[in-house]
Length: 257
Image (cartoon, rainbow, N blue to C red):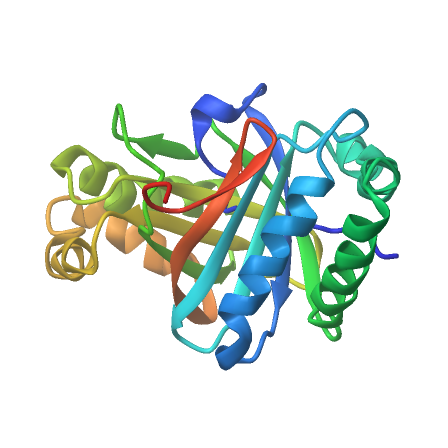
């Protein structure tokens, strides 16, 4: 079985090292089956936790606007080697064997249906430096269905210069103003992805809409520097946070019921 490759997991209080590796999986689930996929994903994810996993963060988002896949899943690791060593299959199998016969039968059906959604999925690996390329407000409640905005760009210059220009133009000012919960930029490592992927989390769609009309109005030098380094067209996507791992359990966004 192909290893489950799964933000963004971008929240710095969960991370061990400043430089992290992201593995992103895009799953093109039919819109009328997204909720079912989420239900199945929680069951499979919960059963796959334990000794042998090296994943440091696991975040799931559902598509809201744009032309991207219906589901995007981010796994974060402390290194590329940890991503290779992450043994989802072995841990799942061990936990599965501890189930009763009746529960095994249920999970057989769950896993088969869940895995069927991965037909045609695609993935990539990216890196992020949390000391340089991420910023967030303090004491943020991430356990909500926040708005997650992603922009992908290629560059004709140095990725680090373009990343810094964007952070100075948009991310840092918006976080300082309180409109943005947090955000940053990842850089391409392997797979079929863009050079740079900028991401931002907003508490509500109103906050995001407000940010569009205000961002970049002060630091015009950073804005001009950013656009001078853009190569070709770019793509923007808007997602909604579905849930993430907390203490070995997939926690759905929002108050527990």
